[in-house]
Length: 96
Figure 1 (cartoon, rainbow, N blue to C red):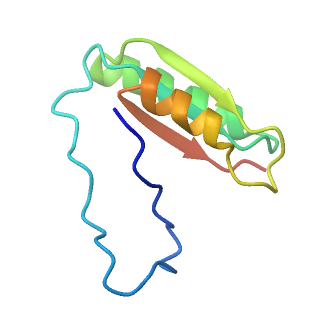
Figure 2 (figure 1 turned 60 degrees about the horizontal axis):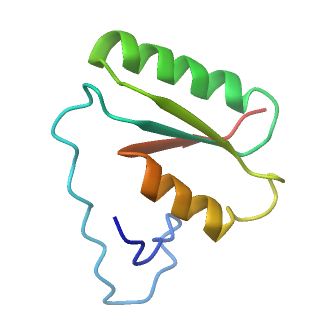
């Protein structure tokens, strides 16, 4: 999958910008899950529990954990590109 752009979830995008949802994964069975931890306390624990539940309930395959170097900065483009290349879907969470 090629990275085209990342949408701003705050709704501060340009007027008239296409904000159509990405196509949904048909099944999670065997899919590779990417977890993006923002580095705050308990974020990784929350994401690991999500992964456990998704494996148990939906047969998710491999789980890859990615961690931002510092919670106060945006995710690095190289890290985002790795997630797109190596994962079928991803979840991020904020801990504290």
